[in-house]
Length: 112
Image (cartoon, rainbow, N blue to C red; front, side, top):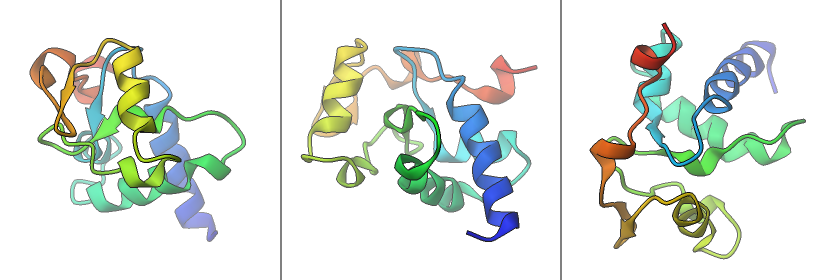
């Protein structure tokens, strides 16, 4: 991994590690917080690679801006992301978070 990409991923992971249990955020919210306003897709790439990182990253808590579990196919077994979120009290129907507004954590507001 290139140094620049590694630095970006590390900044993404530092934010992702702060998402509280039972809360979720979006790729775009993380991108905005770290100053990469159009970097949501790159945040997604970072989440896809986090299983190879040297520490646990709660990637299951990062979803798209509508609360859809778009990254679920990157978890083993197909239902792992959903199960992890449900174990934290997040309500999911048809691969979408039902109470998205209630469980959304915005790093730009929470990490002042």
